[in-house]
Length: 164
Image (cartoon, rainbow, N blue to C red; front, side):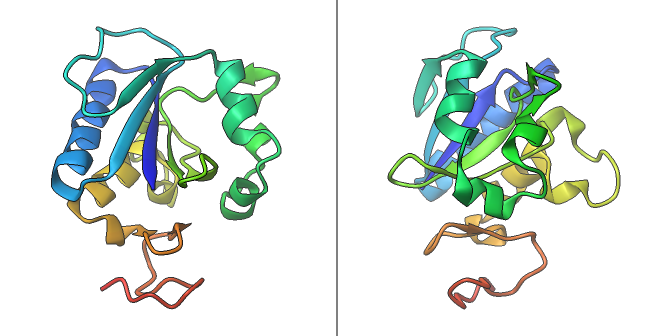
């Protein structure tokens, strides 16, 4: 399992917070983290424990979201509705869970700077997700089968793995 951040979030503080949480995930839980800088707006990322790539939004969309049935099954919107609105890519600021084969299994659909944006958004924002799993990955992710949970379950609905 890897956690991938699509940088840069529009607001510098949220961007920096996402990078700190990713480093914490790596340090505290030994989870592989990586960054795809698709909208570079802020300072260079140095001293990061994972890979930092520079890609275009088009490359990321083609690789991670387009025709991704696994992702389509676990997010409310289709990937094109969530990440390609009106023909414009809207990916920066989001995070994803990626399996060992490189397939995105889940992605936030509201960027980190949308933290707290409306009721029920907690399971859709990058920052809420990162903050939850930085405390304990089992708060939101069944590591055993990579099924994303909405935060209310006590067990994984896919395999029955107990999360408490």
